[in-house]
Amino acid sequence: MKSNKFWLLILGGIVVLSAVAAMLLGHVQSSYALIYKDNVLTDTVNLSSVIEPYNIDVLGSGGVNILKIERGRIRMSRANCPDRICVRQGWKSGGITPIVCLPNRVVVTFDGIGSGVDIDAVVG
Image 1 (cartoon, rainbow, N blue to C red):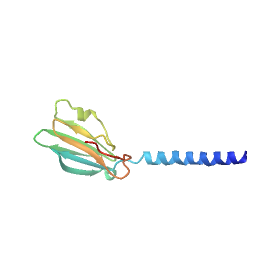
Image 2: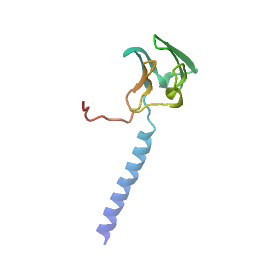
Image 3: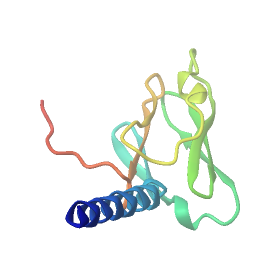
Image 4: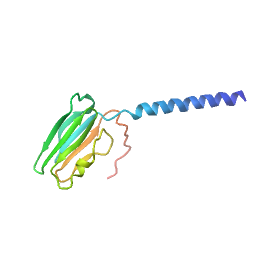
């Protein structure tokens, strides 16, 4: 009977430690936003080092997009495209889902250590 209690305590400790580790790792965000215009990297922003909020104007033949950058997050605040889906995407702080404005050909992707996303393979 004592042997079963010992193993239950060990198993319980492992579960608790795993839960704590998952919570700590879950709060790590992507630290870099990569801004592309017409498939050309135009700017790289370290989101974790932003002190004061600021805007970036992305100008091109397709139109104008304004990105708002704050500490740890970014959003498309304005665009002159007809549907403004990119503006409605809201704030992003990382992950594999980019901010995309198809009519103006602007894409914001995320990269960085601790993004919480591991890609095993790319199928094309």
